[in-house]
Amino acid sequence: MLYDLLIDPFVEFDFMRRALVGAAALALSGGPVGVFLMLRRMSLTGDAMAHAILPGAAVGFLLYGLSLPAMTIGGLAAGFAVALAAGLVARTTALKEDAALAAFYLISLALGVTLVSLRGSNVDLLHVLFGTVLALDDATLLLVAGIATVTLGALALLYRPLVLECVDPGFLRSVSRAGAAAHLAFLALVVINLVGGFHALGTLLAVGMMMLPAASARFWSGDITVMIGVSTLVGMLSGAAGLILSYHTGLPAGPSIILVAGGAYIASLLVGPVDGLLWRLVPGRHLEA
Amino acid sequence: MTDATRASDAIRFENLTLGYDRHPAVHHLDGALASGSLTAVVGPNGAGKSTLLKGIVGALPPLSGHIRLSLGRPRGAKARIAYLPQAADIDRSFPITVYDLVCVGLWNRAGLFGGIGRKDRVQIEEALAAVGLTGFEKRTIGTLSGGQMQRALFARLLLQDADIILLDEPFTAIDARTTADLLALVRRWHDEGRTVVAVLHDMEMVRQAFPRTLLLAREPVAWGETDEVLTAENLLRARHLVEAFDTHAPICARDAA
Image (cartoon, rainbow over all chains, first blue to last red; front, side, top):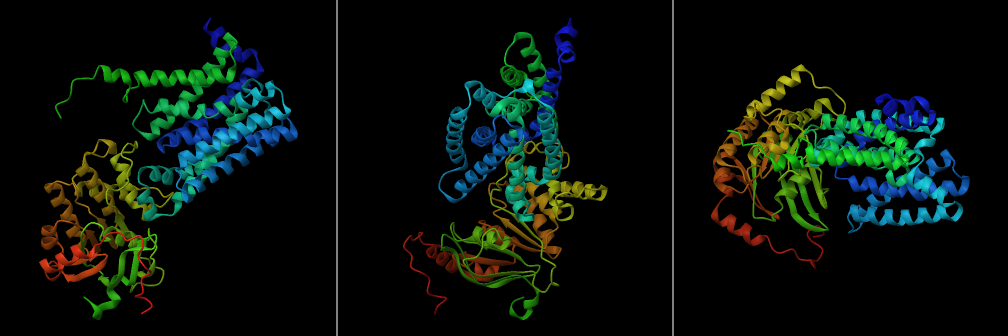
């Protein structure tokens, strides 16, 4: 019974196994990247950059159809361009970075949807916006797994300056010039992860695999290392649970995964031991010291 | 400790002007801080005290003039500077422990990737003990009070083992006991021959603990032995010198003259 419910779909169908591997790879790198996005107060930046990838991928789609390399390269180019442009606008004009990003991503989204509609059908548009996690081919799986590998390696190298740049940027500036470089490298990691996520979950939901697990993890630990672990775990479990949910109920797979992650977030918000809402309602008696 | 021993100056200012948007905040400063000296920088709000420290660490490039560091050192051996900014812009909600925050003081040795060995751990324990934070290692920084946070930052300064230590209003909003404990560390640094510069507002403390004083009001008003600098006359003059920010100030002609 439990076997039928949880294991059988993956044993039976190749596309389910591929989807599971893809989701696991996304969670593996999305977990830590999401935690850093959240701690650097860049949650919305991640969202904006996910949207910004759309017109780049759309141009690739316009020129070459649903081709993996074309849409990947287009997405990467657009993602980097918007990340840099927003940073530049924020540094050189009176506009703050969040406002600059909001402006860029609204333009990108409108432009992207227009471009896809120029040539493709509504089905194509849905593919680009919400992904095709149940139709991952070898090339896409390799891309997603490769991105996860690069991300984890790079994060290990960047860990110290990244953490320090969040906690005490002034101190980092006084001892090292690595801060700006680390920030740029981190933005690059965000972009490649979003491009990886985009193939599976689409531009609109790719960021969900980063932010929802990370936001859940905040309620389970006050320590950044544990937080990263929890975030990755929540992402992986959401991937598996979302696929199973979609298999048995016939719901679209990508949104199911994100909905399950959303459920995990709301559950954490309610019962998480670190500042969860439930613990606010029944606070323990205060201690002696 | 003045002109005669120039080679032992830790920091020398040469006609230094620092400021923002071409408006000077420190105007035509000339002079030197002797190596191993303990100097208080005092002056009214807006006198350019914090600006001067930012200039020394290199966070703010001079509008004109120069700041010379590491004089009398072999070429290439740069003086190490530790800087504690005013109300350090630390994200107190970040999930990091006191221990981890303090141990980045070893940056000079460990850098971006280096490890922290057993010897370093002993040093970290000692630094925490010196500021009275033993037992706080595993607490996250969000749970510290203002005074405890300042103690942790001083522990980090201890580990930085710097030649020049710059403190920007280190005792603002800090209670008497914590101030006394931290001031003892400042004295210890002075005894170890480090050059210490502190921006302060408490004149009583300056008179008691700081041998030398720079009274700043955009222009240097007086600079020397503390007793000679902190006269009623000088303080009054300093108060008058800091004028309002003049948007239409003409270009300073002093360099041309």
